[in-house]
Image 1 (cartoon, helix red, strand yellow):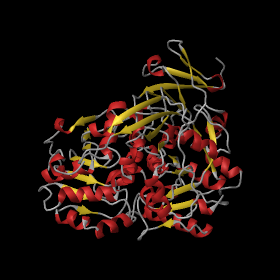
Image 2: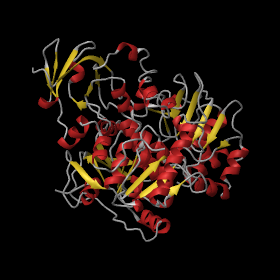
Image 3: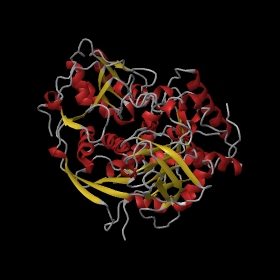
Image 4: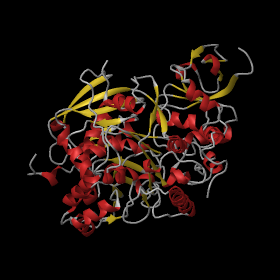
Length: 172
Length: 422
């Protein structure tokens, strides 16, 4: 496996149907980005934020990110999650992963292939992920180029800025 | 190969290409609805060029009237944006305000056969109007209003054919609870509702069912158009260009399921999850409740106000139980007032609030304290959704919620509908 393009993260496993309220609790909806990032999974898995380290990976089950359109993907990006792999990803959550430049991909079989604490090595260019402990490699579902470019390019804002459609700074 | 309703609308909106499951379709947006949360300083950016102001509507709904300075700032940003570009469809605090999906319904903004987006997840509510409507992210809204387009990953479609007719006391919410319990999530799939029994469901009932499609994790949720829909649209949005869209006779579905409406009964979803969590009311009857709620984009329609009033008429909410009722829009509130529903509901001891997402999102009123129990006719029963995470939230129809509020415990509403014509 070649070095530069590989993302390597310690695995934290979450189950099926993880909803966006769990990642971004309602009372934090109108708070700032930093406060929101400090509330990720605060009710669902208290203490997790203190344990995880930047670059770590979340492995989710079926329908990851179900629920509301709130920017939970931005919170995962901001709290330092390196990437997310799930059996399936909710359509609206995937949109927000693209929108906010957070790396998230579907990967059937990923729940079985990884135990918590394993190291996941993801090479997006090759659409594969490997378990460093077992050596098992899995295929990651390809994302269409248009969406991948937006996701890896930092999301929608940099693109609209470059086209002169929105201003660089927030209004109001 | 024939196309489903969703595929036909997306094909049309993408310039006539033939989209199919697995494609990413880039489509023209006919209607872009911006709500108060979209204008939060953290997510909003100053727009330099707007694609087409006539395609934009602004509705303040999540925190209205503003309970915090942040909410007030978001709404101010929305007003300034409307003023800067001369956007006429601004539904600010006042007589035309309401929950965005309900305002869209009241005003006929969701045009059959077109694409509508909103940065709120329950946007598929507009699927009741044969509109390809989808909740998107906040940044998607900036993309849509500046470029006039958006993208969708096209999924396969599950088709539901309704036969028969609901029995008295059974509502669209119960159809949803049946589908959620029987079939679970529809991740990455579209839902198409039709069949010979579809037209027996009122437009408001279809709105409930379409709205709740979000909770099935569906992409698009679309009803076939019928005379009731087109008559309504011509009345509330005369002159608008519509493209009512039926599926092709040889449309390809992932699966086709038939539901006999006459066989359904009131159901309740247990706390913490909406899908795969429905039980018969007898399984939880007698469960004590602290709060009951009817409202939200799913159950704030005039039909919902009518059924609550019917159950409450001449009776009293149980001592120790709080019953909160939130009409979906101020226009619905006024209609319910004129019809006498509000007086009946308030005489019974319930609290009627202005139109806002309110208790459904654990917003600025009606929150639950630790270990409290609530039964709600709204959109979600997720842990912590309506307040403290230790609170338990059951979900039922407005009739079930109202009957439960009277008893102070979860109650089957059947007794209130005995003798009603089917």
